[in-house]
Length: 154
Image (cartoon, rainbow, N blue to C red; front, top):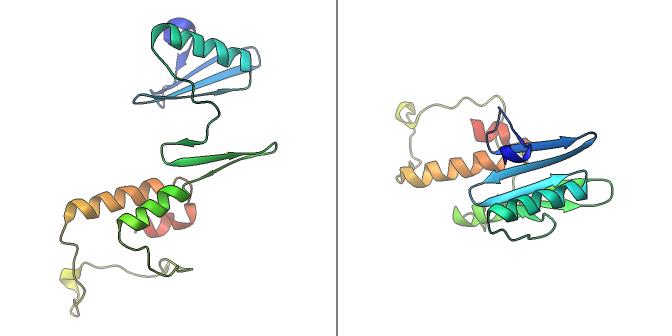
């Protein structure tokens, strides 16, 4: 990529850009997936040809779903959501039958360890790996759901 005039980002080593005048192509690499976008279809096509020359690639067409994020396009905007990801997370956690809540956590709530609670009647998470996995998934979900960021961080 670098030999073809692309510049690697110093903030994200998987992000490459190439510009010619007012045109720009952006290539994002995630394991074996590439996201190629830009404001010039000719430069995007050249990028695909350069990549195809060095690697076997398949063009999957217009972006619809990438890394758990769904993309919906119109003439005026691009909307990103993680609806499918969130529904899978709810199902994996066994919470599909639960009712929605308008407030996830009170902002003034003080949280303390169950070891210090005198009325510790609730059962603690026994599977640490499952708990860590759930928290990791929730942290990824806040990419498109800033409304739950406070609750997840607490």
